[in-house]
Length: 504
Image 1: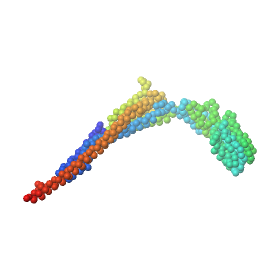
Image 2: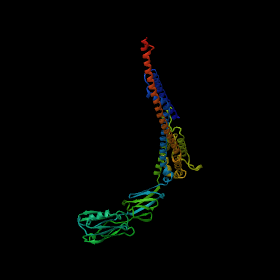
Image 3: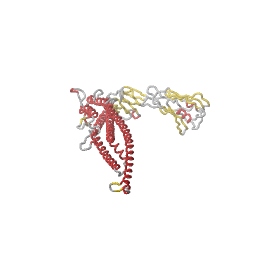
Image 4: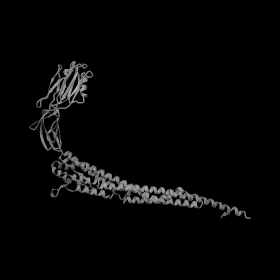
């Protein structure tokens, strides 16, 4: 109704202005016909054209503005709906209510619960953590030139070959060649220089007893210490540490042995090549650090009520944002002009959506005596359509009445699942929002076509009137000149013509 009222008022104003201009143009014709002045052709043409087209032009412009305003409002509504739907995902598919948290009682162990975790407590005793092997060669002169040959470097069953020639046969040159090799199996090399000389240090990039480092030297020429870079590592048995054997006269030392993490879960002994343990407790990841060695800790797996409360609170917040948005789009104030009202006031599309969603949040899940609603976990519907959360009641329900929460948010017909399905039907292709948007866009196309037709008609009418009144202006000017000439000859009401003065 507000759009029609605004359009009518605007059209009436335009028509009044056109009539005023037309009256002024008419006076121009009268003045020209009485010889007082020539016609103002430009103003006359403009006035006549506007009188015929201004009302329609204003009506089209007003309708275009109204359509664009409603399109923008529909877009705002859709954005609020999709934001709510995104926030519902973990509640509608059931994943949030099956989420668990895991905590350890001491230092050096952190635990994370994932898919497959179940509630329980576990006693974890760590005797050693997994380490990556580190080897240090004997001392060499920092600038010592070694022989040439081929180094075969292996880690955990993978190996690469490094050619040592006259361009890189120094300790630093060999370290650079190892680090840049394309087939590097997982070892880094560096040079550490101490009081005794320079040392080649090799580090495995992967923890675990199986990832030991070995270096063999082949195609040796002009040894000069190159053979002493050979070293053989042997993995320890069970959870034991690795050992090494040097090949040359300059012995290697093992700075850190390669070993697996060793621990017990209750009475079950286990090992892991990594300190990130994923297979010991189903659905739980344990991260071990050195501070855990020699301690027995309790790992507790329980429902993650903190994350669940956060997800439910976020759902309430997003729902309230949607309700507030719909309220703004349908606002009404009788003391204000129609242009100040909400762009979707009385809109059937918005009303359909609002009623459907409010029915879901105010209704129950289940049937008969087993039916439950949001109020049972501390979420109540307010008079303005928003939801209010009692955090104490919500947390109590999550901790002490998980079955009620699970029923409310089950993935089949829970509150979140119903809202998700309903929103999908609204925003999908062919839904009420898509249908409404398509209708508005079609109307805008029609308006654009009508405006083009009106522009062409205006141009045609302008050219026609311009030609007609230019010709009339010329004719009137000629008639005025003839009238003046005849008056000079024969005289007028208050004058005597030249012919009448020369009587025979």
